[in-house]
View 1 (cartoon, rainbow, N blue to C red):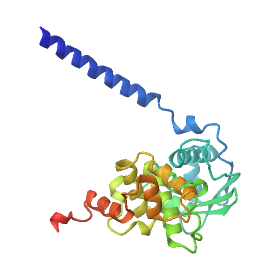
View 2: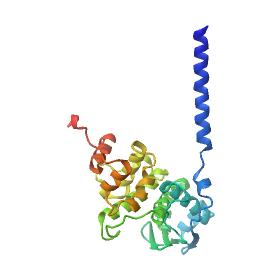
View 3: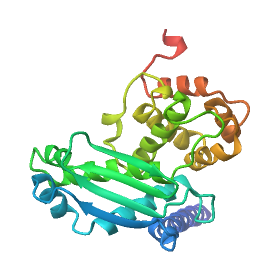
View 4: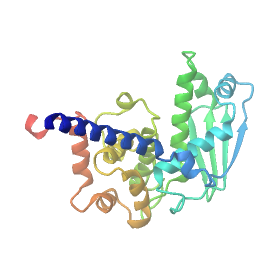
Length: 269
């Protein structure tokens, strides 16, 4: 009898814990809720290629471009920052333009005046299999990357994007990290093998998200903030600042490579 009561009580506790866990997840505020009152900037959308096939496809998938961009902007902000009260790079006006041009997309501008173009030719190429879901996935992923450039913080005391590779690798790595973190890539399928975090983009982006998943759940936010707290900024200095003095960026990269199966463990060599 006592054994039955104990089993029943254990089942009750397990059910209660599950309910609390579910409630906690469902009660957690979304990025839209946390950032709904934050001014993401005046979004000025312009279509300079209205007669193109890429433009037609874009508008059929995204009928309200301004609302779509604002929604992704809040996802980016929620990934880079803890709250609207943080020291956030301000954006006053965000000009988003569809252009009939080569390339994919790019961000320009500074001091709160941001310019992003998106190629209608790329939209058309993405639609080659007549799959609107594929175009939407690619368009959102590219937008997450470019919007990160609009809102992310920048390393201090080490030059600029065009003069310092560390600066460049951080900027492009964080942009792809935000894209990875928000489901903007196809998981392992899009993760590059080998290379180095200094390659930026997906090499660094997937690595940064791995650090978030395995070392500190707030790694991306803290790493972004480290640019204001570690001067002159460096990858290893920022890693030590965020994770602790016992960590080293190159050792972590090797640990990541081993964990992902890209290189053998020392015992296997």
